Image 1 (spheres, rainbow, N blue to C red):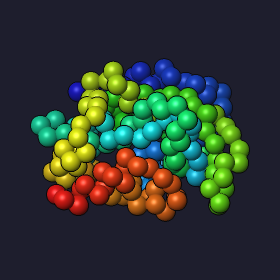
Image 2 (cartoon, rainbow, N blue to C red; image 1 turned 30 degrees about the vertical axis):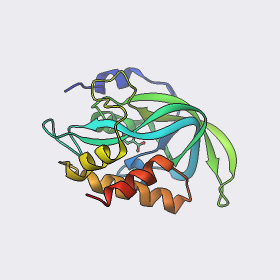
Image 3 (cartoon, rainbow, N blue to C red; image 1 turned 90 degrees about the horizontal axis):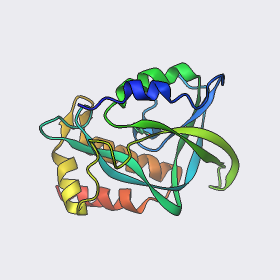
Image 4 (cartoon, rainbow, N blue to C red; image 1 turned 60 degrees about the vertical axis):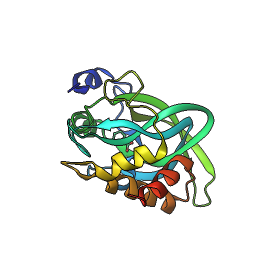
Length: 190
Ligand code: BEZ
């Protein structure tokens, strides 16, 4: 399996910073199993979430991969998520956990207030699985993706739970996401 751990440890965009903002757009929204100093709902501009990345090690296996979230560039689109202020040492275990194609990227992020309005900006970090990584699956018909998600299981649990938890977390944030909500609807057929 491809392994991005060593590459990520060279990607020190916030060298010398005591704390950084990590923007979660996938499992990090509902499952933050690391220490953080504070968390705030936020969005990033110019990105859309897609279930286009294979999971061979968490929500699937090498023989029957699952599908998990990554981001694609989409001018003027907004991707909602959760930002965590962390100390830099939190990244090392995340680099290992997300080694199947995700690379650290620096992005501008906007914090959101209780009314859903963007209020302040900061630089942040995301883990991005771009279309040139070996585990990138890309687009497929929605029903095909839902069927794959319904049948895949891995060491972190059923792939289905990943999608359902993500859809629920986005609803709780009051966030719009056409792709995720349509995929979750499709999942009900399987
Ligand atoms: C996220 O929730 O932002 C995320 C989690 C794992 C890999 C990539 C992104």
